[in-house]
Amino acid sequence: MKIFLIAGVSFGGVIAVEIAKKLKPLKTILISSVPTHQEYPLLLKFFSAFPLYRFTPQTAYSNRLVQKFILYSMGFETDEGKRLFLDMLNATNPVFIQWAIDALMKWKNTTIPQSLLRIHGKADKIFPHRMIKDVHYLHGGHSIIFEDAESVNSIIRLAIESTLVKAYSKI
Image (cartoon, rainbow, N blue to C red; front, side):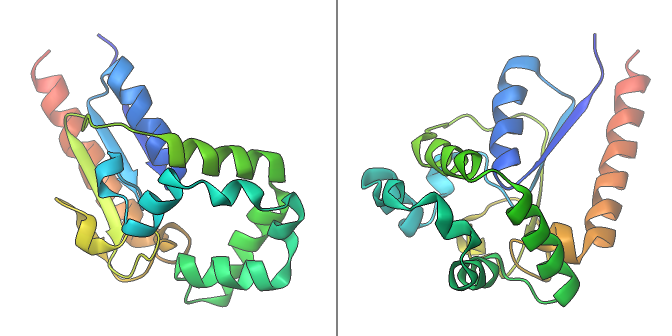
């Protein structure tokens, strides 16, 4: 038996859920993410049904006005968090960004992984907290991994320790 945990942030959480369905980790950790498409807010459900996002030009992601909107949507509160995110956004191939958005809009998962840990910003505008169930809430938005890494790491560290203790006590 392979003993492992898997974690994902935002779209990476969607990927972690898909991997967890196949490989059965001891724990799946989602940060600023959702385990099923049923937790999408109305706006994402709309874009899933009417894929207008496909008409977004690849150059849009480097536009300063678009970047300000993205930063607002992500809920950044610190200049350092904004800088880190913009560095990541500017270094990411726009073709990948468009592919990831399309994959997120087409994702129709209904299976929640066993032993799920969720960490989420109370002010998340991408996946609003009223849609989220069974979660560790932190102050902040979708950007908590950038702006409150210490709290996120503390929750993950405790989860890893307790999960491994349980796993090894069964061996």
